[in-house]
View (cartoon, rainbow over the protein chains, first blue to last red):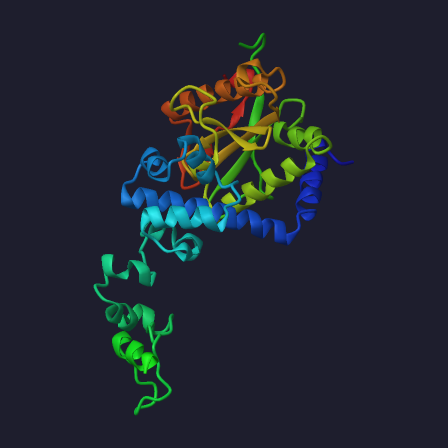
Length: 167
Length: 162
C-alpha cells in the first residue's frame, strides 16, 4: 500500500513531467538575466536605488527585475545596459554558472564594448588575447571598403570616400 | 502561538535538490507534508503559478542557487530567514539558509495587502517563524549544523525531544 508521502512524491513527479522544456528554458533565461544583473550591480558597487534613479524608475521596479520573473523587453534591456555601460550579451552569459562554485563570483566583462574600460585597453588587445582568439572572430570595423581601390579590400578613410562619392 | 507544540521532521526533497541548492520539506507527525499539501491544494486553483514555482525551484537547485533577490524577504523577523517565493498571487513560505539550503513550507493565495491579514497564509508564516526559532536554537547547541548544502544533525522535532 502506498503511504501519503509516496502519493505526494508521485504527484510532484507528475507535475514536473507536465512542464514543457520550452517553459523551463524561458524561466531559466529570466532567472539568468536577473542573476547576472544582480552580480553586475554587486561588482560595480551600484545600489538598486541608484540604478532606479539613473533610469527614472521606482526602486520596486528594480526589485521586480531582480526577482527572476520579469519578462524584459529589448528596450528595457538596452536602457539598463546603457546605464551600466555593458553590452546586452553580458546579461545572457552562462559562463559564471557553468564554472566551479568558487569561481562563480569572478565576473569578467568580456564584450568588445567594454574592452577599453576593462582589462583590455584596445580592440586589438581584446582580439589577440589568448582567451578570445579561439572564442571570437577578430572584430574589425571595415565599413568603407571601396570596389575601385587599387588594392583589394583597401579601407578608405571616410573623408576620401566622401570625396570619391562627390566626383 | 500554538495551543500544542507542533511535531514534525524535516526531510529532503530529493526530486528537486541539485548541485547549487538542497530543499527540505516539513513532514508532520500524521505523515502530512506541508509542501506536498501546498501543491495538491493549489494545483486546481492556480495551476500555472504552481508550475511556475516548480520551474523556478528547479532552476535554483540546478544553476543559480537560492539567491535572496528571488524571494520576498519581509515575511519574518530580521535575520530569521523566513521568506516567500512568489508567483503572481501565490506565495510559498520558505526558510532560507544562505543560497544553499531551503526549507519549503506551505503556502496559499494572497489576496490582501498585508500577509498578517491573510487567513490562509498566516498560519504557515507563523509555523515557519516557530520552525526558524527551533532550528536556530539547535544550531546554537550544535545539534544541527549546515555542512556544505546539507543540514546535518537531529531534524526531528517531536515533543519528547523538544
